[in-house]
Length: 95
Image 1 (tube, rainbow, N blue to C red):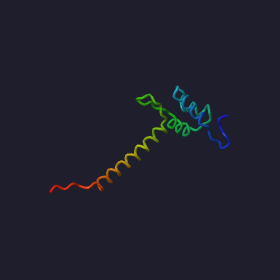
Image 2: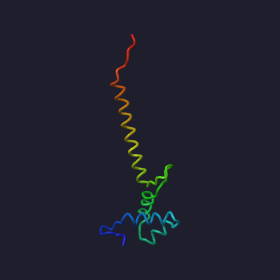
Image 3: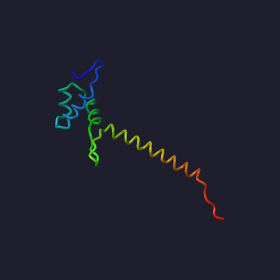
Image 4: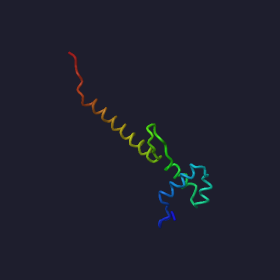
């Protein structure tokens, strides 16, 4: 069965239910058939649903969230570096 000793579902089981959902089964139907809560299934749908980029790469919502977090971190670092350059770059004086 898909449940381990800690009463949690394995990742393959979660992905399978998300796939069934995207292929037309309702969340309510899946919850009844597989004995999972609606909140858990909703979370899995958000976590394991995929998006395809312009280059054809397929990413999960989790990967997109990680990329957004990394992008924000890099933007912050970039801003800090710009401020440091402004502070440490000598201003030229004419005259």
